[in-house]
Image (cartoon, rainbow, N blue to C red):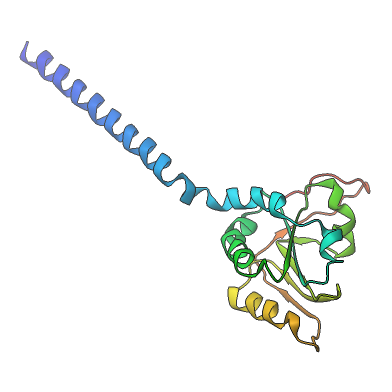
Amino acid sequence: MQSESREKILTANLKTILILIISIVIISLLLFRNFLFKSTYLLKSFGELSIDPEIAFTNNKPTFLEFYAEWCEVCKEMAPQVSAFKDEYEKDINFVFLNVDNQKWSNYIKKYDVNGIPQVNLFDKKGNLISTFIGKQDEIKIRKSINNLEKEEKPYEEIINAKFSKIQENKNNEVSPRSHG
């Protein structure tokens, strides 16, 4: 009799502890969802925040053009940094975000030879390509290039980091979603 009573008490205590742990996990996810999923949210919002590329290249302002994909882990890592650049410079610079999985941007993907993402291209106000950054980049390098956009003499610069997502070439000459490699 006594052992049955102890088992019932132990079972009740285990159920209570399990419910408490599950509740703590659910509450934590709700409280920290913005922090945990911020990069994914930022990437999804980039397309909505983007200026049309045709307008950007004709409005006499420098342009920050980023090629990205929502599945790209490196793009997610850089999203908060890119968002901060946008907040800081959007009055003086066009920000264009092109998702490589969207077929309507295939002409830009080909034109700027995008085969790894994230790829950031910086253009002066005349539409001349000044810098290309491929992969995860140091904030200081990008900021320096952004600040140099207004200078008259700007040699072209390409900076590639080994940490990027490769876009695989489509063998059938058809435009389709790129795969992560």
